[in-house]
Amino acid sequence: MWRMRYLFAGFMVSIWLCGFARAVFADPAWSIEGEYFEGCTCNPGCPCLFGSEPTHNKTCKISGVFHIKKGVYGQHTLDGQTVIGITDLTARPDKNWIVFYIDEKAAAVQKNALLDIFQNHVFSFAKVPHDRITVKYVPVQTESSPWHKKASAANNLILDIELLHGTGDPDKPTQIVNKNFSVWAKEFDKVLDMGKAATHRFQEGNQEWNYDGRSGFATAFRFSAN
Image 1 (tube, rainbow, N blue to C red):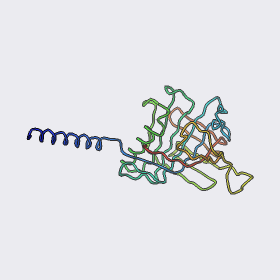
Image 2: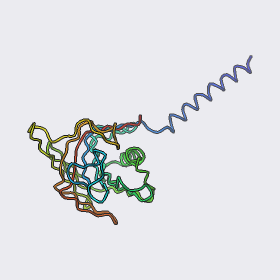
Image 3: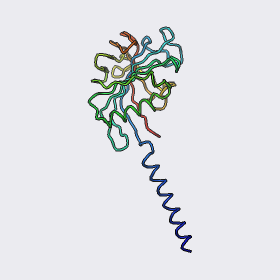
Image 4: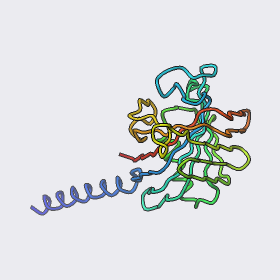
């Protein structure tokens, strides 16, 4: 009888320890939501959004700005943080590259959280080799108004999007409604506010461009660990 009790107690302790280990070593629960805006290679009205080829050399390079209005990573808040991801959506995985800019003012735990979320989840579809991923902690600034979106990362990126005025309703920009979007299909809002980049200039390593006058859009986003 005592032996059975000891075995049962040991069994219960083992279950508790396994549960404790899973709780300690499991990935933290996280979620982020906020505003996204982007500049890309294409002429305004980017045909990639309709499943057609990009307008310049079948190449679609983007500067994507994620401004988090509400976010958590475990017990840590990510409210007000901004991450910029720059990549070539049309490159093969073995040739592709990604640059991440994260605000240098973020706390160390926030920097680690943001890098995990964006490298391992938000941009995981790109399957970029680690040696082609650049991460920099630099001054990042964003501005947002109903008709104007702007972001900068040190001296490496300046993106200034002006949304296009529609003629049917002067209070709304030109929009794509009920989008057909292969990347971030569920995470982005169904409505995209279309725009034009007054300025879109980038330089990092051997990557450099001037896409002034090219396409841009803005929308809301929500990503989570579930």
